Image (cartoon, rainbow, N blue to C red; front, side):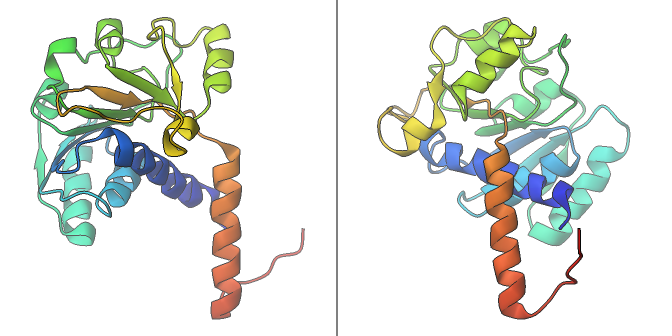
Length: 219
């Protein structure tokens, strides 16, 4: 099984689970900053739950956003607008996915004022795109594993986190509140859990057996 493909699928699914509780139900404009595998996988998953009418694509590599737009349009049937700056992507977007390189010492660009009230953000690349003041202004800040985030913080990542970091599992099980107002700005900065890869792989294996497809390989 292709682990790159599995990771892309489960990462987008985790973003969409968080968005189910933290994004506005009528979210229709998605910004994607970083037009690689994760940029595509996140939109593919979000499209299953939200009435997306426009994807705004930005990438620092010339031509990559254009190629991404063609793929999203051809495979998902969504309208894509290639934009020339991170600011143009973020402003007026309902859901913001940042999927660039993950850096321990980032040079972030997203300003606090760019994110509109009511928007939801899913940084797949940790805090690489987000300036500290933008993170600190979130009304609710979640992650899929608080302990893992604190571990990475101890390694030098995430030096400007909000004081209150909530657990996505508690949100899904109802022990923590989701969105309660249309004006709340929310974020789920998921670390990525190996258990999600294993669960996805097990499901693929089960379905492959049912369909009688695939080639067994001895280890």
